[in-house]
Length: 472
Ligand code: 5AD
Ligand code: SF4
Image 1 (cartoon, helix red, strand yellow):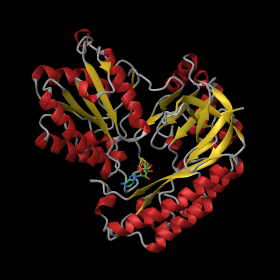
Image 2 (tube, helix red, strand yellow; image 1 turned 30 degrees about the horizontal axis):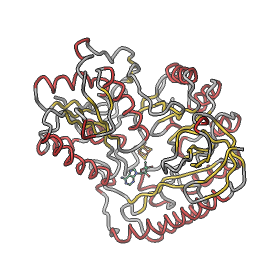
Image 3 (cartoon, rainbow, N blue to C red; image 1 turned 90 degrees about the horizontal axis):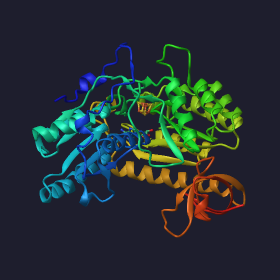
Image 4 (cartoon, rainbow, N blue to C red; image 1 turned 180 degrees about the vertical axis):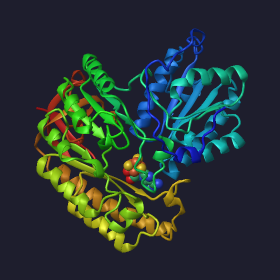
């Protein structure tokens, strides 16, 4: 039993991060543990979690479990959770109720919780007290040990908790079962050292640890061999890639080296404005396979609030970077994240956020109401903004954001743009779906044989969140 500790999660040491290539070992007797049994994994949150679930699924299949999309027939149910806002929390606890019912009907079911919530001391304490029927809890640093955690819980018929709070090493040999055959997530770094005052990520994902370039490039090259068209380089703050490595090798170098492989499309998320260098902009501009799409979280347009958030830039710094990007990459699309109702945000502060939105006219934005996260500095700040005001600000912001999304999309009407066609459309109306180089969702009337290819598509209709098109 290893339970998380908030105190430990806050610590950053100079201890060297080791790259381990032999850590994931699956004992012979565990390779058959899941014979005849089905697993169901539900994922909440960001791309990092999606990708962790791809690892978890591969590990379970190494143990002979098979997948099911139907929770009713699952023998093993795992919730890969997100801790970023309270509603993500509540959703998970709501879902646990459903699993409890299933377990009452079929007691042999193994239920587990992993991901960012599993890293939270308060959550694990609650699970130990009130959810004794949850069989396993494992943290974001413990995924590689899932076979042993699972086996222990089954053998001993008891709740098994393994959550490491300290920073951890980089484990390189975890298998992956990718959701797509055409586009792939690649972790280039783990953790975050920015400690923005509202954010729980530095505590749930540990200190910043960059993967060595050899492993990243090998992964890209193998994906090219397997026919993949697109990779997304993942990290909480990808622009800081390499700052923790011994050699002088940074995000611009990595982007350049990935661009030299034969992968047709490269994306990267998420950027922090603080670490976006001129060299990176140059590399994006000079390499056709790096997509002209930048996600550049603003969070707030008020310098006062930005300071309270610990964001390390001013509105002026942000706008300066924005214009630099637009000048170098005029065709690019830029999206953002914005938080409203940060503790003490006044109408004036909020107006300043709207001013930046009116200036940047974003292609899209994820907008959130501030959510208090246990253990973060912002959770201790006096929050005197009422929920009514927060809701009203969010609505006003979203109205403007949507207006600019539509305006940005309008420019695409009758234009021909490259689209990686990924799948049949969710609408199930016989169309296919894919994304443009600038990350716009397009629904296309076309034959299924085009799935997995990049096609020139003429845009025939434009909406706020998607477009329609036909292959040229
Ligand atoms: N409350 C509201 N939004 C948050 N985000 C991160 N932490 C919080 C919080 N405590 C938002 C930020 C970040 C995005 C991933 O989630 O905008 O960029
Ligand atoms: Fe959180 Fe800030 Fe790190 Fe992003 S950069 S993960 S918002 S601490």
